[in-house]
Length: 555
Image 1 (tube, rainbow, N blue to C red):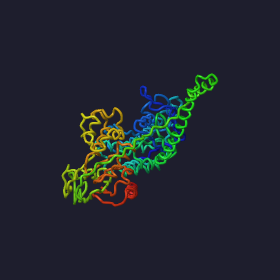
Image 2 (tube, rainbow, N blue to C red; image 1 turned 180 degrees about the vertical axis):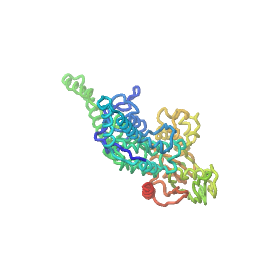
Image 3 (cartoon, rainbow, N blue to C red; image 1 turned 120 degrees about the vertical axis):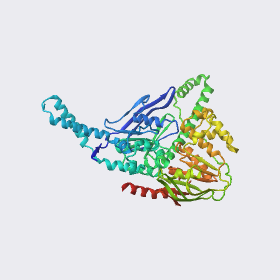
Image 4 (cartoon, rainbow, N blue to C red; image 1 turned 90 degrees about the horizontal axis):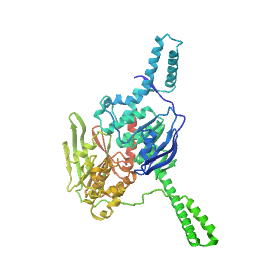
C-alpha cells in the first residue's frame, strides 16, 4: 500500500468565545470563554447535567450555541467521538478504518487527474489551462508539505492497540458489537491526527489493556485533547489541565484531576469565607438603615448605604454535594468456606475454544477481579457460575450461596410499572429505609425523578436504578460486570466504599483501574485460552500487562 501524507502541526490555537446555551428560560451556561493550545490535554468535569457533553458538541460543530462562537484556523481539524454512536455497516474493519485517509486519497487522486489532463491539452495560453496550473500547484504544495506516513503500518498498529487482531481486519463491521464499532471510529480519529480530539467517555467501550494503549497514544502522539470521562485513573494519567463546568460558568485549572480536586476545595473555602464576610456586612448595613431611616441627620448616610446594597454584587458559592451518604450492605447470609470451586473447566463454541482446563477457587469473603481482553472468556466464566451455559469439567457452587448478578441486561429486568421510589422501597430493609430519598439522590434521582415510572427512564437511568436495587438485596456472592460505565465519580466512590465493607464474596469484571485499586485482592487473567491466577496488586499487574501489551503491538 502506498504512502500518504498527514498535515503539519497547527500553529494557532482554537478558542471558545463567549459561548452561551439557553433552553427555554433555563441557562445551561453563559459567556464561557477559553483557549485550547496545541498540546493541551483537558479534562472537562462537572456534575451530570452541567452541560459538559453539550459544550463538547458545540466545539465539534455538532450543535450551535445560543450565542457566542468557536474560532479556529482555516486548516484546523477537529475530531469528535460521541458517547453513543450510530454507525453504518457497509464495509470491512480495514475498509472502514481506511476512510480516515479519504481526504488525503481524494487530494492525491485530484492531483493525478489534473496532471493527466495537462499532458493532453494544448491550449497553453488559455485561462482554463492557467487555472488548472494554479489548482494543481496549490494542491501539490499542500500535499507535499506534510509528513509522510505508511498507511498499512499505521492502520495495523492502531487497530491492534485498540484490541483488534489481524483476523478481524477483513471481517464486516456488522459482525461486531456497538462497542467494537466505536473502537473503529476511535481508530479513524487517531489515524487522522487532528489538531483537536474530543472524546466523550471513550473508555466505556474498550478493555483495560486497550485503555492503557490509548493513554500512551494520547500522551505521546496526539496534539490537543478534551475528554469527558468518569475513569479517574485515565483522566489523571493523560490530562494536564481541568476545566470545571458548574452553575453556568467554568473554572480553568492548570492541573490534572486529582490536583484540581485540591484546588477546588481551596476555592470553595475562599468563597465560603468571602460569602460569610459579605453577609455580615450586608446585615450590619441593613441594621443601620432600619435603625436610622427616619432620622433626619442620618438621611444621607442611610440613602448612601441603600444605594451601595442595591449595587452590591453578591458572592456565590459553587454548588457542592453536601450529602454524606454512606451506603452499607445488609449482613450477608453466611455461605460455605468455598462459595465457588472450578476444576478443569473448558468451554468451546463449535471450533472456537474460549478457554481450556480453567481452575478457580474462591474463598468466603474474597474480592477478586476478572481481567483480560474482550472475548477471552470473562463473561463466559460468569455465565458458567450462574448456570446459564453448558461446559466441560466441574463447577461447584458452595453451601447456602446466594448470588447477586449485575449484567448489561440488568436494567431490562426491572418492573416498568413501578416508580423509581417504589422500586427501591419494595426491597429496602432496616435503617436504609429512612434514607431512600438520599440514596436515590446520590444516584442522580432527585426531586420529581423519584415519582417517574421505570418505563419512561433512559437506558442509563435504568442501569443506575438496577445497581441500587442489586446493592440492597441480601446476597453473599456479588458478581458485577462493568458496573461503573454509567456512574459519575462520586457515585462510584459510594459503591466502592460499600463494596470494601461488603462481608460476602465479590467478583468484579471491570476495566476501571481506579475502581479496582484497593478493592480487588486477587486477579484472574483471561487470555490465550487460559485462566491464570495472579497475587499482585491491580497496579502491579497492570504495569506488567502494559509492558507485555506494548511489546505485542510493536511486533
